[in-house]
Image (tube, rainbow over all chains, first blue to last red; front, side):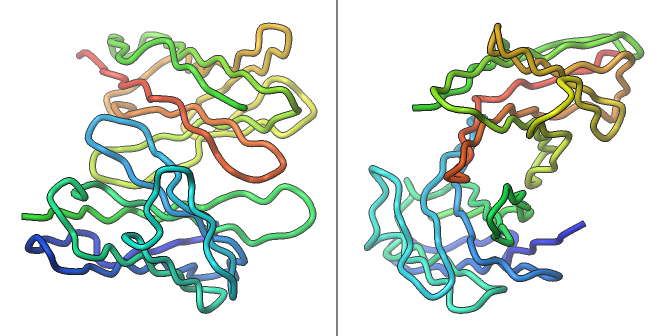
Length: 117
Length: 112
């Protein structure tokens, strides 16, 4: 099956610093990637949808200036948490989709656990 | 707007017993339905999906689910669970815009 990787798997940073998380589709080209966050013992909440070569579409309530998303190639999307604060601590999961005219499955990465001290 | 309701936050089941995890959805359009499993500190793994066709869907690890349009349900079942099935299970819905809306999850506890 299709494989999506995320790097790093865990990151601990100081408050006020920026953190970049990478999401890669390893064996397919992903025209669309999605970013989710998951608080402890809660469900996944969609943060944004990114299409290769265009600006990301953010869900209501998600600060686009705080969560910068770049989808520069068909195999890589990055999420940068700028000026991170403890409330940004969460589990961030990406998914990738190959695109097309019919339904296309999303393949999920293993997640990145961010802890902001 | 779409939504997904997982009626049980936790379900304890004895090993080798059957289990049903309940899921109801609401949507004004045709939908795609999914069940995902999440093991501790890991991402999501697709168990099964309903796109169209037969309402009984078989997935991995011996799980199956039945799409019931009249009851707007998509309950997940397994006839005999194992310790390794201990995980969080998410029901999800998507429509033609490809956005997936997740339920709040059901934690399956397998008791020895």
